[in-house]
Image (cartoon, rainbow, N blue to C red; front, side, top):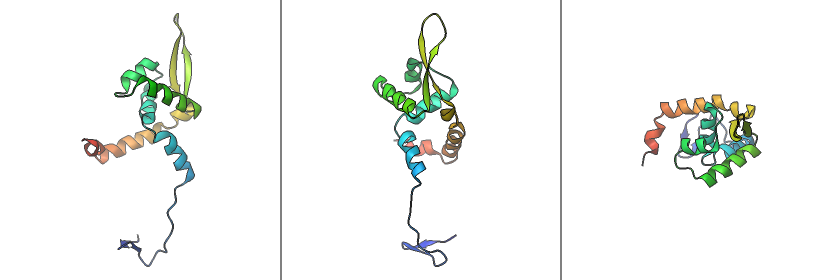
Amino acid sequence: MAEHVSGSVASDESPRSLSCDMQFADVFKVLGKRWNGMIIVALMERPARFSELAKAISGITDGILADRLRELMATGLVERQLADGPATAVLYRLTPVGQDLRGAFQELHAWAARNNISELCDP
């Protein structure tokens, strides 16, 4: 592995430009937006009503939750479902594409635990 010294690259490796894969850029447009990850994590447990999501995600306002749910539906990660029963209720749930994030989120959770991320975030 090459070592960087004083901003230069060791002789066994030629300088390369840095790049960001456009798929990662697209992923972080969605997942990097505040609250989206928390909404997805909450919905990984089970489908939920709007009010249940609002209670589960501390600090989010109803307006922001509504906006984020619309955005997540537009990206195909979340869908609305009418709940069975005498009173019509709307549930939000992850689509199969949204469910496919489970492994990635579990890895992020494990990484955060290994690296004491909560300690870094404490004010």
